[in-house]
Amino acid sequence: MKRLIIHGDPGIRKDAVIEHDGEEYICFGINKQGDWHGPAEPQLWCTVGSEDERETFELRNYIPMHMETLSADADAITVVESA
Image 1 (cartoon, rainbow, N blue to C red):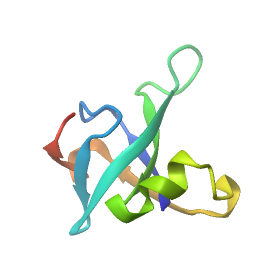
Image 2 (tube, rainbow, N blue to C red):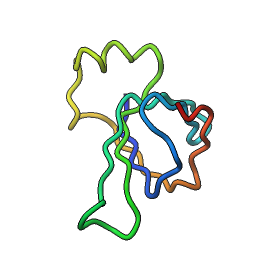
Image 3 (cartoon, rainbow, N blue to C red):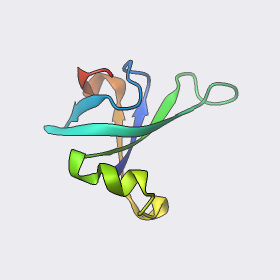
């Protein structure tokens, strides 16, 4: 599992399937940042991973601050399934 910070909104929601840097991820959870006092464009802080990691996410069997963090612009994300 990883944390993916997307600058901008590619039009995805929870359970969307996306592709970034040649890898396919499922968005288990999304937090939208920057609506009120944030930057000019919103940021989506997504918890992403493979289908094998879904149970780990649902049981909260991970430490969020120890996850690898990636950053990308909305243009660099390919939406495979928008959920």
